[in-house]
Length: 225
Image 1 (cartoon, rainbow, N blue to C red):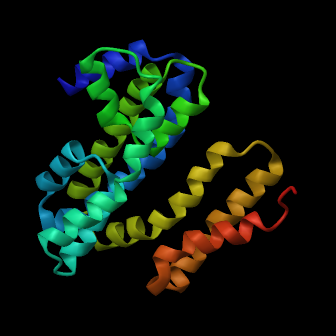
Image 2 (cartoon, one colour):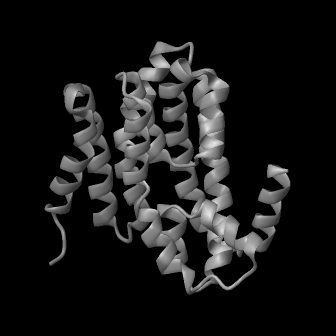
């Protein structure tokens, strides 16, 4: 069923939408691997995969995994998920005027709308429904597939788990490569990635804040005014 839906979305989506979504989908897949590595041992591989398929919210899933690992209760998990996903109300409101279709497709758009598919829909001249469904199907398969790889492959490998966790903040910088338009931008992106990776290993206790520091530092060097 999922495979047939993905094929239909691929056929319906314009080729440029698929190409634009492909590089982002690769990064999302690695995020999924990291989540599978983090959640798989505690939740169970199949539960982690089911969470990615049904919840389909990376920020909420990572927050839930962190809270549960620290002994947080159900109320804390629900509160964190509600706060992190509150932005989807705004995203949906922005897209609503551009989604003129039946209830089935509206439901598909609602489920597949995330930060990445929303960004592509707003930036593209193509119909928003096509963009969200086409790109969203790619992102969904990448997220669930990455989770499955992380949950099954990473569960028994400490080295794999450490490497995946270390790469998580680096990928935030990697997503910036999508918007690179010149050599200077490419150089800053590469420098940010390498610097972030070095800081992650040098200062593991502040790993989650490293991407923010790297982004600020690189944006202040060589940027246009």
